[in-house]
Length: 336
Ligand code: AMP
Ligand code: MG
Image 1 (tube, rainbow, N blue to C red):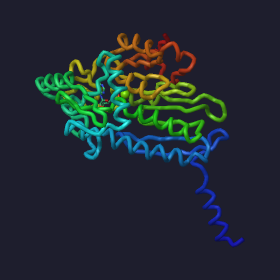
Image 2: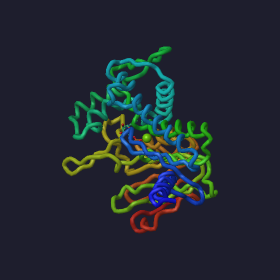
Image 3: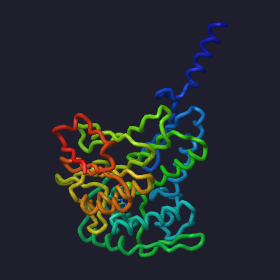
C-alpha cells in the first residue's frame, strides 16, 4: 500500500472513532449552547450519534419557543403582545409551572419575569432597584394569570412569563423521551446544573453525578451514585452580582421581590422527572429548608440542602452520597 494512502486510511479511522471510551462501551457526546448554558448529551453506543444530535436540534427549538429575549419566540410574543400560539410545548409547560407554583405556595412563580427584568438579571448590568419599583413589580407578578383558548394563550394582568427555573428540566425530559424512542438505553444529559441519567451504564455500574461546590476553592461537594433519575441544583453562586459589598443572586422570592434569603446557598433535588426536580429546586431555594422538607416528602423526592457550613442529605440518599475528601473541615455533613 502506498504510504500516503495508508496515512489517509489511518486519519479516516481516527476521525471515525467515537469521542471517548468508557468501560468497554463507546460513547458519543453532542454539545449544545442554548438556554444560557452549555449542555452535553452523551450516549453509550456509537450507533446513537444521530439521536444525540437530534437532542441538540430539539434544545434549539425549545429555546426558541421559550426564551424571554428571542424576538421571534413564542414566549417573547406572549410577553410583549399579550397573546401567542398555543403549542403543545407551551401548554405542557404552562400547566406544569402553574401546578408546581400551587404546590409550593407560590415560591415557584412562572410570572416572576417583571422582577427578574427589574433586577437586570437578563442584562449585563444587574443592579438593586428602587423599593417602590420592587413593590410595583411584586404586585404585577401576583396579579398575572394565563387564559387558554383552543389555539392560543393570553396573558392577563400586565405581567410576563419566565420559564428560566423550569425550562432546562423540561428540555431534559423531552430529550430523554426522544433518546428512548430512538432505542438509546444508556445516556446522560447535562444542561447547566440539570442532569438526567437514562437507563444503566453498559458495565452495570451506577451513574456518578457530581454536586458542584458553592465555594470557589472547592470543586465538588461530593458525588451521588444513582440509577435512572434527574439531579438538579439551584444555587445563589450560579448567577449574582455585588453592590455596596452585598451579593444579590438570581432566585427571587416573589413575596418580597428580592433575592431569596433563607440561609441556603444551594439546593439539589433528585427526582424521576427533570422538570419536577428543576422547578422544585428553585422553589425550595425560595422556601428554605424547613418549609421545603414537607413538600419534598409530598413529592417523594430526595434533597441536598447546603448552607454556609452544612450539607444536609435526605434519607433516601444516605447510601448514594459520598462527600468529597476536601469537604472535611469546610462543611459538616448531616444525613437525615
Ligand atoms: P434555577 O437556576 O432553575 O433555579 O432558575 C433560576 C431562574 O428562574 C432565574 O434566572 C429566573 O429566570 C427564574 N426565577 C427566579 N426566581 C424564580 C421563582 N421564584 N420562580 C420561578 N422562576 C424563578
Ligand atoms: Mg430550577
